[in-house]
Amino acid sequence: MSNVPADLKYTKEHEWAKIEGDRARIGITDFAQEQLGDVVFVELPKVGAKVTSMSTFGVVESVKAVSDLFAPLTGEVVEVNAELPKKPETVNRDPYGQGWMLVIRMAKPAEASALLSAAQYEQLIADSGH
Image (tube, rainbow, N blue to C red):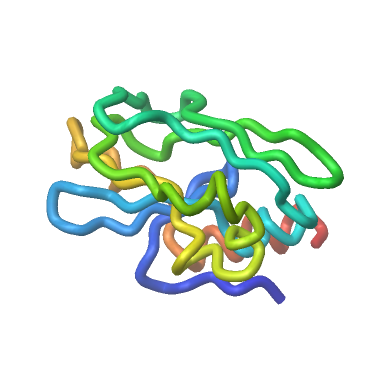
C-alpha cells in the first residue's frame, strides 16, 4: 500500500502539496514513484517562473516512461530542489521528504481547497485498481 501522509493535499495527477502559510511545497506521490519505477531525470522550472494550476511545470523521466509534472496550484516558484537533477533517485527514496520538487508562493490560496484530501486520494488509488 502506498504511503499517503494525512497532512498533504493531492491531485488526480499524483502530485502532492504541503500548504505552509502562503506557500506550497510540491512533489510527486509515493504511488506515482512506484508506478514510474527508477527515476533517472527530473526537469524543473527556475526560481521566478510562474506556474498555473493543472498545467505542466516540468518532466520526470524513469526507466519506464517520461511523465509531465502538473502544478497543483497557481503561483510563483520561490524555491527549487537543486539536488534532484543531480540525484533524481531521491524521488524514489523519499518522495515526501528529500524528494520534494519546488515551493511556490500561491497566487490563489483558495485553490488548495479544491485539491484532494489524503482519504480522497487513497480512494482514487484504490479505484484505479492498484
